[in-house]
Length: 397
Image (cartoon, rainbow, N blue to C red; front, side, top):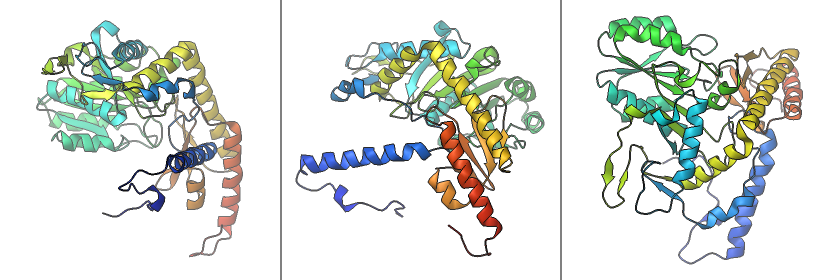
């Protein structure tokens, strides 16, 4: 198998124990290196502005959530009470009645999305899954694992699903039903799909189930003019996924997976743990549940709103700065993703920019500042000037 990352011989795990001081030195160096990179991480949607060192005691205990958050398993070494508090709070943010909502903390957005799609495909066993080409790449993986037909639709120049094409293919698939993946904050352009239009366009196929991938936008939309219209506000939406390490900031990837209660199949899955389990993952990272609960409770709704407003304002600032230097920015409404012309590869690597074709983007999550954006713009302007005089086949650094 091709190894793209060089293997450090000092990291080799050998037959005999390594000296503790050497191990700690390697860990310290790793931490220092990651922290040094944070001021230039602009292109990926993970908020690096957090600190949980004051709750480091959590690293000395096992926190394993087994089965449903509402189920009392025999092991009793989990933090389900905290996980349930997170689920209830996020259900309210997503315009759902917490009493009528099932949920759990998944290992990441991809698992949370697969959970939602699985609920839809169970409800509609003959339906295909429909998504736009702007949807996260893991949707293709989920459809393959579920052995379910995937229909990939076009997206417009902003990254929104092509509603007319969805209507045409759903008329073709009349009677099968439709499981549709809609996105609140698409991967590359931060676009938000129109759920109301999607539900109407897909209706010719029969019953419609919409899963909402709100990995990034799930902690932005509730604090905008869309707060009463997003999430479960449309009855066609059966499930919602929101990543916690993106807008909130976590040391581990995790995501809240939510669905309408009647779609969950909670039953005893393993007698030896005596727990009902409608999750995909069974044993789950209880440490993440504690950290997410702590972060949400510490910020409260007011703190989350300030975070969202700051991110939106900073995205507009970035779009204005990119416009000033001629980088042709695109900023979708209610988005924290700013797209612009792709610079030289060395610039992309220096600032960890996400790229697709001729375009790149930054995401204005919590650790991003105006100073970081200004530094990027200085480099972009210099890079553009250098490329004007670049000889074909040569690269100026």
